[in-house]
Image (cartoon, rainbow over all chains, first blue to last red; front, side, top):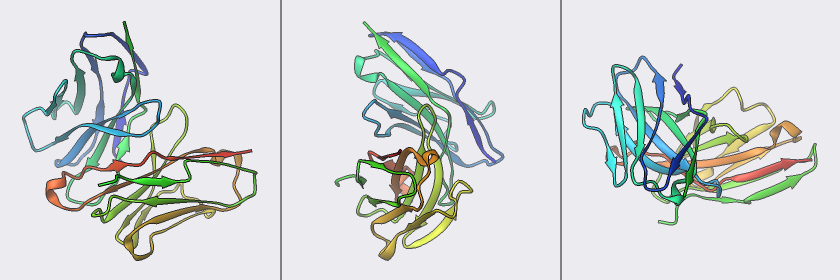
Length: 115
Length: 116
């Protein structure tokens, strides 16, 4: 079974600084998708960024970028120029490609942004 | 595109009562998922529909839980004889099987259940 591990329960970053959230996963599949979701106190899960495993290029979305290391099964999220609105729980998630399969989530990292 | 909507947003019920949650997916999405999330945890998969067919159920979905998606549109999740351990947020999500969608799953705001 696939598993997703987020080893950092909490992280803190100063406004305008850069922070990296870690995620590792375990799978025997070669084709899959990886996601980072943000869940602010309002509780709605919001998609931050998506990575297809077959793509070598790391995904970027404005201030958010990933470092995808397929061989190491590592998928970290970098947030640049952190803003107060980035404070939230961040979940890493895995999904097999090619089938209508479910997302498997990690336990999350709570990100605090300080002035 | 109005997003995934869920109703009610909050429900407080007495132990032993039945509750039902409704989910309306994004209109062109044929896949619909239910997840459960407890405080401090990531969402856990409960069940999944492709159109009206329920294709997968988690072991977390006990006999007291039933989900339906008649006509492949909205879905309902019913919990019978609620227990305090059922207290959680129930998240609905949807996605499209169109390749260009990238298998991205979009979530609703969730339905909070408190069993007292």
